[in-house]
Image 1 (cartoon, rainbow, N blue to C red):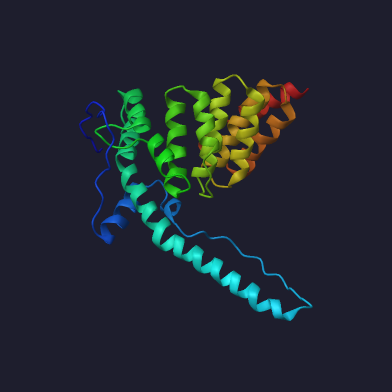
Image 2 (spheres, rainbow, N blue to C red):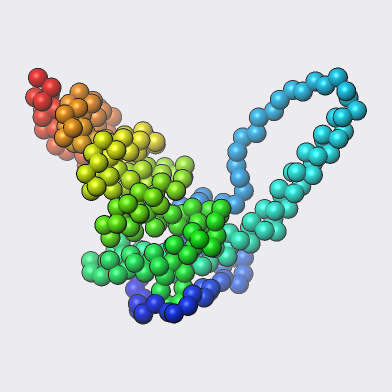
Length: 264
């Protein structure tokens, strides 16, 4: 387990250590990011082609010229502005990630470490600084996830919902966990209907043997508490039928029995 000495927060924030070589930057990203793909700076969206027929053919060259200018401008922005900004943001987020990782793995001083992850320490940026200073970057997006989970752990559920709602990811696990985290926060706020909605979203967002049965199980229990017994039964049966080797399936027959009894 990695340990560092935790000092009092500095009275001012300064930039963190920045890897000097390209290889060091790549290593820093891959080692300390939750998922390396979160830091890809190229926008990977599928473009849709359309057939355009115009009567005034002389305008075609004008339109093509404008399109080329926009594309070149976009590429130039990514190369000379966005990429350096992403690299700087990732370097500045390094220490905050360390605080967060220690909070997750340590058995003591969790609140203190989560607060350091949020607000910074040792003269380095916290997740809230990354979100503020690097708006629009992938690093700021990931910082929203860290901030939301940190707030969830220190029982600030309103801020947890806000920051996790600002995070987006297609990652197999990270996306569902963020949705599930919002569900957990709503449960603590005694907003069971909202919690159920987000647990279902988390279960359906990606299908895998870890997050899907976990959030189906949570959804089933909340549905039972709300008296939505047929929904609960469907969630529990799906765990038994599709995820029989999961942890949640170990005693799933008991929960299926409860849901069936409540339905009668």
